[in-house]
Length: 161
Image 1 (cartoon, rainbow, N blue to C red):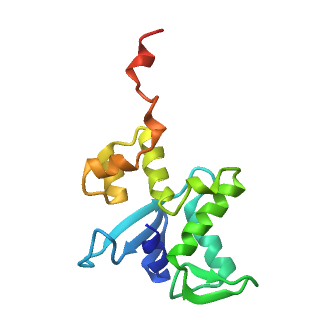
Image 2: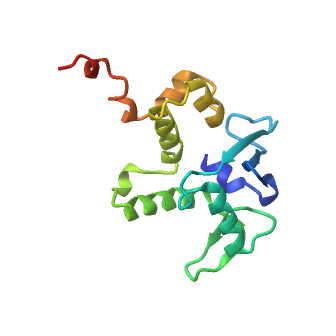
């Protein structure tokens, strides 16, 4: 969630041999702030690997503590303040446009929907998608899965027409 990204502190991310260990202190579904731990494994593609991207971000930003993701002004100066949630939404839209996609179809929520859709399309069991995305019910989680499964295991495709 964008609120969790904006609130994440550097000391809540542990770099381990298996990937990143994120301690999410509070979330929309954890109002009592019991906290949860999430694992972010290495990606198979070095260009899109979240672990390598995290390490590079720390290297180029020089951040050692405080907010993990911070605002950058128009002059390229890094703030000490955490990134605002609205900035995350605008960033997702800019990256969509850079990829040749229409900005109108994307928002910060697209990150969760994209995760759920891609995981489902690749055959990840629903219980695992729910656990990682921290959805409480299958119905809510399924609402995030876009048409990515429309033709996957479609019985009409198995009729030999």
